[in-house]
View 1 (cartoon, rainbow, N blue to C red):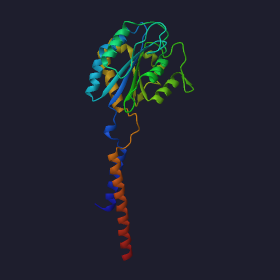
View 2: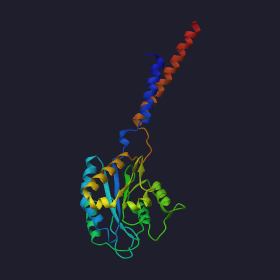
View 3: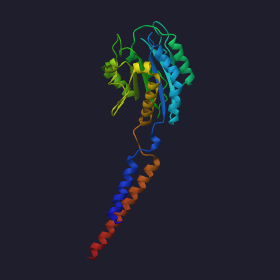
View 4: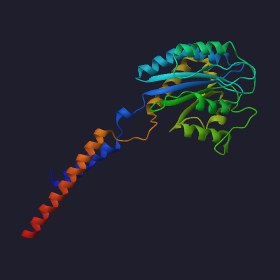
Length: 269
């Protein structure tokens, strides 16, 4: 191999080491929280959580993912906030799955009416769940059969409505998924997590009418989100940096030797 070809191959190898993220950086841990409209029509939705969560978790674990779970019911207020007409479901993270299942069962029997403030509930959940942080993906699942923010405007960061909530999710690095009627997708399509051709919007009617099919589809989507989501900018591992340093040092010495050799040849001509 000529010196020129050797240098080209070495530069290519160094570039590959530097720009390809390490597999160990892939997110394999996550916090998943459900934020659920607790109005009188939501019995099936809470029942789906209590019946499906163990299967969802088992499937997620089979892919090498460790997950924590939480649950917050809402109407005008959410979670541990004082409710106007009833009591909100509330289980913080991290929590044993059985606690979330028990709370979902309780909520299904303790639904109440009021004004749903879905955007405010998402905002409250972002600020009040005990997110693990670090390299845990933060996944929030909003479930509602009403529009985004009944009877009250939502503002954040000088913005209002969906654009405000979109900014909030970006600032908090939360992957928001929404299970609702397709007629309300337009209320959430700018704020739901999206990547390439995927968007985290799910049909509530499918959950009610084809529960098992919905669970399989939903779980697969969550697994892909968690695995592909990197909450930190990719950076080389220390070992990669060491290889990069040695490669650059060797390349520099090679260049100097090449220049010395060529200078010697020139002096003999």
